[in-house]
Image (tube, rainbow over all chains, first blue to last red; front, side):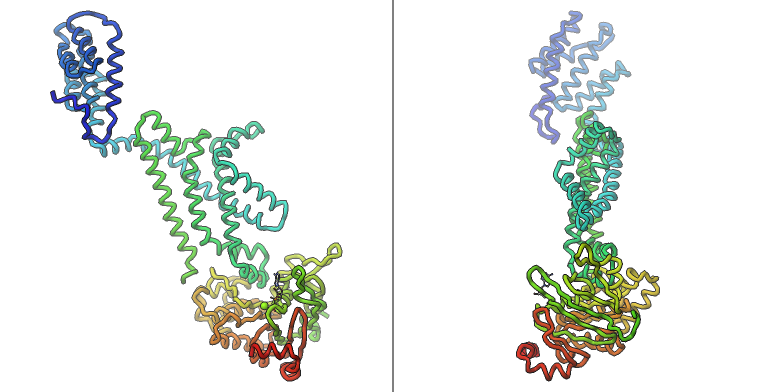
Length: 349
Length: 259
Ligand SMILES: Nc1ncnc2c1ncn2[C@@H]1O[C@H](COP(=O)(O)OP(=O)(O)O)[C@@H](O)[C@H]1O
Ligand SMILES: [Mg+2]
């Protein structure tokens, strides 16, 4: 018989040995249920199952094939049962041609047999090349992942808008000479840089209700991400401002500029180029960190992938999610490199 | 009284500035008349920069008083201590005093024109077109209008300093402070900067110049002051100064060293 290549290693999608074990095990369980009728035809079925449970696949195949077509002995379902068993057996050893043939045999007699039909699609899926499978899976999972991606992008964009502004304010507060504001800004940075983002999200979403503040998951997510990233950006921006030659401030003062004017017109614009690389890094980290909000009931890309994966156990989901994250981080990297050259143009013109 | 032409533009009396234990400017008094050209010379660390910076409140003095056009300015007494006046007043005063630094401090992110427009635009809140006209006129005056659209990074030191001068005079200051304006320049670029300062002097600008270039001091100064260890050791017209004080051992040593 052309079957039984149990050590077949042509395909790269290994791991059907466990499948076979599961299959044999289930056959064993099936045989342990007492036979309803002890007729001849059923004997082939029972014997076939027995042979399977001992691992004697060749014998099992021969026996199961002997279960006759319906009509000879009336329809007791043993035909369909035997052929499905055969189909599964062939399938488990990757003999897709035989498995298909057996399924079609069933459909000849029972054109509406759903089990056989479903199994045929499984076979065609399993027997098609990897890239076609991947393509089919992509079409299947992409819509759900795309929805998650939209949410992830929304969170990222909102944080990218809020955190530089808030970060700048915190940085200016720390640099400024008003003590209470200085202390407050120091405290905010201390808290939000010194604890895990995950903990901050839990706190905002699960602990704040204890103090009478209940937030929507999306509000909590945006708050957590924005505050955390503001704290990081504040320190980066402060470093940027303090790295500008003090002569620039002196020149601005000598012109008669106020503190605010010199910051806005002279100092802060000069930090842009220096700040682009570290801020770009933060935003790339942010894209990945949005995955953490999946823990507070937000369905974004990671959560979508997680849900799909738990339903289908299909690693294509994970590959797709990884590709989407990579695409986002790559676009950001390129964008920031571009912005860096634009805002720093004055240095080499 | 404020607009009396005979009142000195700036009157410093008993100015003292300490950095910790070090007294950088020690009880200095000085009147600067309108249109006067004052040159301060002296060894490094003698307090020349500190004095100049005190005049436009970049340094907060510990003692003394500063009068601008006859009015006491810049400081208020709070709980018996001298504190700087409100920022808005300080800024207003500074906008009337131009300052040129040894290291230019042009704004690197703005074009040459942008640098010169910045004061009129941001500080004096002039309309962009007006600020632009003023800036172009100033750039013309310092002879660098053809570079108006480039960024400072591409300029030579001499060109940078001329732009810095244009930026300062675009504010139409009543007093110009030059702190070693040519010390950071290659020798061959010194001339163009002095030429610019000279033309300003001819227009009647009141100015205080700290420099080590004795030839220039002699040529431009109405009065030369020699400063050492925070005090004025000697002063006089260039003729007086360079003849009479040549007997002074310390000044002679100093001049010998730099000439
Ligand atoms: N910000 C400062 N902190 C401490 N010491 C200073 C500071 N600025 C100047 N000094 C000191 O004050 C003295 C006078 O300095 P400066 O006015 O720059 O001298 P000059 O311009 O004549 O070379 C020097 O001893 C200098 O080290
Ligand atoms: Mg100096």
